[in-house]
Amino acid sequence: MVTLQLTDDEALVLFDLLAEYGEAYDGRVLGVRHAAERNALWALSAHLEKVLVSPLRPEYAERLEASRQRLQNSGGSW
Image (cartoon, rainbow, N blue to C red; front, side):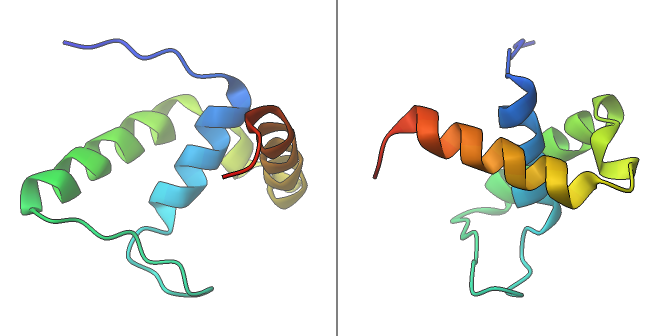
């Protein structure tokens, strides 16, 4: 078993990315090379879904955008 520690911002942004996995609504596509990678991503998404309450709140979009901005500003450019 592996334990991960994520900030609230990291967890929220990662949850949103994984929740939209496979959806090309904005041109993003998360490619996987093997079915095992897909299953691992689904498992991570399920764990995040169990612990996060922000996605259930009406202000989710605003919280997500704020988290994205904080992470972007703290991580530099890529």
